[in-house]
Length: 468
Image 1 (cartoon, rainbow, N blue to C red):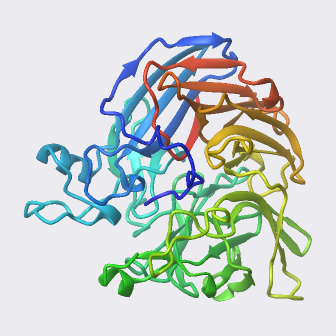
Image 2: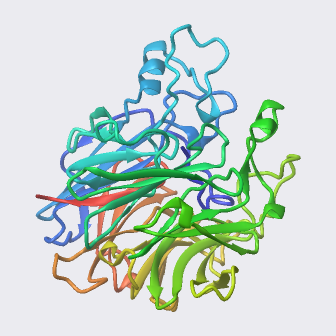
């Protein structure tokens, strides 16, 4: 449904939508694109077709951006995801929906009730390219054309909301997922399940959390699933009174439910900690009777008010690299939270071949602490498995960067041997580049830049799909 990221204090100049779809078959390249990069970087983000009164940018129609790299050449294509909402508004020539997928007063009778926007992530699993948001089922996308093929419910095996952050096990190929609001809007029910490497749903279950919460990401290790229930709380009673449907209520406390991957919801064990909020998990793994999870943690949730409408503290509403530790031996029901760096950052990524296992390399987009807009993401940090900085690169003042996506040099390459791909907005020129970094030497800056003639608006997530 939406992706709350560390844009709290960011420069807002690149949030506006672009009004066109286009194809650019031959893009100019500075430097040299690595010949091993053969495939497509797909990115997703909100790009409202029409301005709607009171609608937040997060609820904008999904637009896919595809950078295809092959033999040192680059091309680009972008398309809106033609959801039922997008089609209805396109035909009407105006906005019909506001925030949270609600129809606006005056929408024609017979307008679809489906306000999905498919605007948060795009992944490839079991032969399907799926555009995701956390309020609806996955949207099946045709690779290459970016045409929408329809919802993917795996032959009716799943229903309801589906996370924008499923986890794909690099060993088994299984995709593990969850969905919040599984009992209806602003309810405490969560669903969860898995899809095997062949695209068959092997389980689908649900449970009730301690309270209704916006659960953007979750944690998967080799043998465990962890569900963070953090105090951005949902309340239908508030919404009915015209108050914030979601609000920051730190007195509710932070919970994380832990269960065995081969267990059931009845086996959930709840851990507690100081109130915080997390949108994105870098990775997690097991060490004996402990689970270690690296996350980007906010002391207070950004972009949400308290129930009475008062704002959270902007100094506390920035994400920092943090390590959670869970003791599974039963000695305590508390988990620890240890900050590993004080730098503002978001969009953590690893070499996905280490997902759910201990990793020696990680990267995230960061802010420049020397600039007044310290929340703007304008650089990349490279860290080791203990959180120590291995490299740090900052863009020229004013420019901003998107999530860095790792691409391995080849199937047998060592962990972290490859490149980072990230879209960069050039503020002075008001256009974007695709930047390609040596993943283990980010400090040297991009080894290649693919130049677009227009800008790619700030977005959310993307992934690399290698050529067959």
